[in-house]
Length: 386
Image (cartoon, rainbow, N blue to C red; front, side):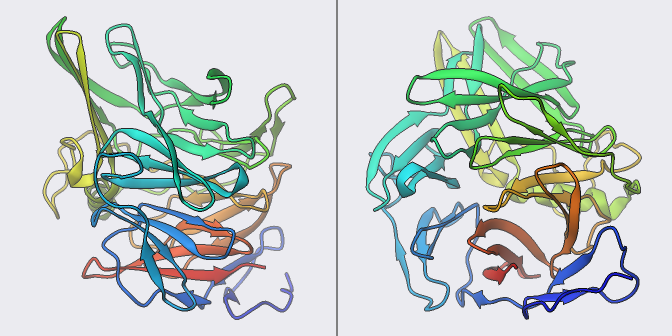
C-alpha cells in the first residue's frame, strides 16, 4: 500500500485504493484566486516578479494580474499598430524575461521585452498557398528563444497522416525538423480556380493524433497514441523512449460528442487562407471569432464521422521542472486527469484536478487553473505543487 508523505493543503490523497506503482493525488484547495470573473483565458504566463500575464481573447485585453492582491493593469491596447493586438492569444516566455504573444486578429507574433515594451512583430503566415505555405502557430519557446510549431502542410487530397515539429531559429532565420508526428484525420474540400482557390479542412473528431510540447532546455516530448508511450527528443542525440503505459479505451457517447462540439465552438482554432490574383489574405480566430467550424449549434451533435473510442491522451505540457504533464481522455464531465512523466519517459504520479477546472499554465512550484462556471464565467486560480 502506498503511503503518501505529508502534503500541503492544495493536495489531498485520493480516497480508496491507490496503485503502488502510480500514486494518485488530487488538487484540493487554491492558494490564490482572482476575485473578478474573466470572459476567457486564452493564454497565461507567470512573470519573474510572480504576477501573471493573461490574454482574454473575447474582451480583447492583455492583463497583468497580481493574484494575491487582486491588482490588475492592462498592457497596451486593442488595435493594429505596433505593440497593439486584436485577438490576443497564447503567451510564451523568451530569454531575458521577454514575452511572445500570438496575435490572432493581426495574424502575427509580437515580441516584448521584460518591461513589456514592444520590440517587433513577425507574420504568422509565410510562403505562397500555391507553392507551399508555412503557418507559425507556436506551441513552445526554448531557453534560447527558438520557436517550435507543428507543420500544418498536407497532401492536396488531405490523405497525409504525418506531420512534423519544426524549430525556427529567429537569429539565423533557419528552420529544421526535430520530430515526426501522426496527425489526426481530416476531410478536405476545395473550390475555385488556380487564382482563387479555397481549401477547407475539417477534422474527424477525436481521431488519434500524437501530442507534443517543448521543455526550456530544447527537448521535445512526444506522446505516441498508437501504444501510449512518451518519447523525449533532443536534436543530435538518441531519443529517450519510455515504456508502454496501460490505458482503457473510453467509448464515445452523445455527451462526449456534445462536449467536443462545445469546446470547438469556444476555443477551436480556425484558419482561412485565400489567394486571389496573387494576393494572399489570412484570417485566424478561436471559436465563433474564427472561420466556420463543424461544431453546429449549442446542444446539437455535429453530423460527422465519429470513431468508436477516444484516443488515450488529449494534450501534453512541460512544467518548469521538466516533467511532462499528459492529460488523459476521460468520459465527458469527469475531472481532468494528468499522468506526470519524468525525463526517462516513466510515469511518476497521477494528478486529478478539481471538477470544472482546466490547466492553463505553470509557475514556480505551482499550476494555474481556470474554472468555467455553468454561466460561462471564468475564474483564475493558483495551486501550489510540491
